[in-house]
Amino acid sequence: MKKIFIGIVLIISTFTLKSQVLNDYIIKLNNDTIRCNITVIDENYIFYNYFNSNQKYKKTYISWDDVKSYEKKNDNNNYVKPIRDTTYYPPITKYMSLGVGAGLNYGGFGTCSTVSIKYAELFIGVGYNLLQLGFNGGLLFRTLPNKKICPYIGGMYGYNATIIINNAKEYNKTYFGPSFCIGFEIFTKKRNKYFNFTFIVPVRTWDYYNDLTNIQHNPNIVLYNEPLPFTVSLGFHFL
Image (cartoon, rainbow, N blue to C red; front, side, top):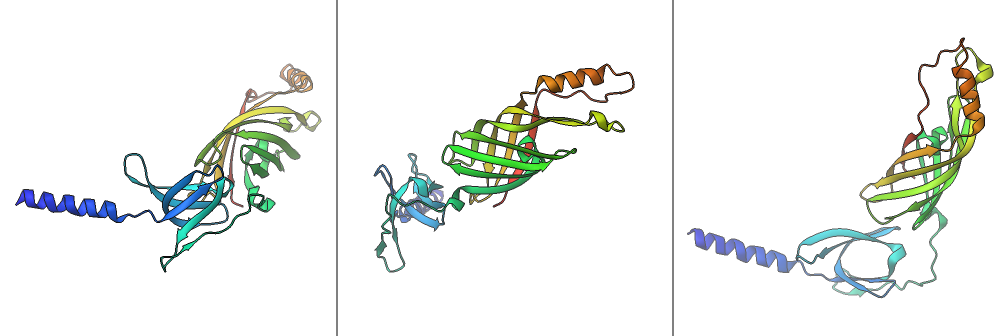
């Protein structure tokens, strides 16, 4: 009886596997063809199911930037093949995002606007740095732009240090200079939102270090914490 049961299970499993027929095609810009079942198409990505090298039915997606055209079977068993001009340029809004967060690339506590084109991303952040308006602008190099987790490295210029002394406003000052960073973006399932984490090393000016030294040697001022040689930032981009 057990052998019969096992045989039925194997037959059902085989039937289930073979019943997943790949009806659709995606043609990439390099003319490679992906045989698959397309599930969702939005303005940024085509989501589809396919069989990997181990014959497992998997889910994934591909960016429109890498797609020349596709063929999808409709309810009447006919194929529709959108004709896509290879000189087509999506609207600039497709590449833009807006987020909120805390850190140098958000101007302190503020917002960050980005324009991402594949591996390159320009950004500008404006916020409040606990003393005045802070800003930073820079360029990031994104290593895995089509993955759920995208690492990046880059640089920026803007505010990278502040000195704030309670009851001694004459010492309060914001300092500007370059900073270098490394971090990663974590995208949501539909890739229309993402979290951003950045490790930043600011290159602070001699003016900052001279002012800090004078404060450290001032007997009337007590420093409760020394500045770190690095900072971190965290943000969430939703548009």
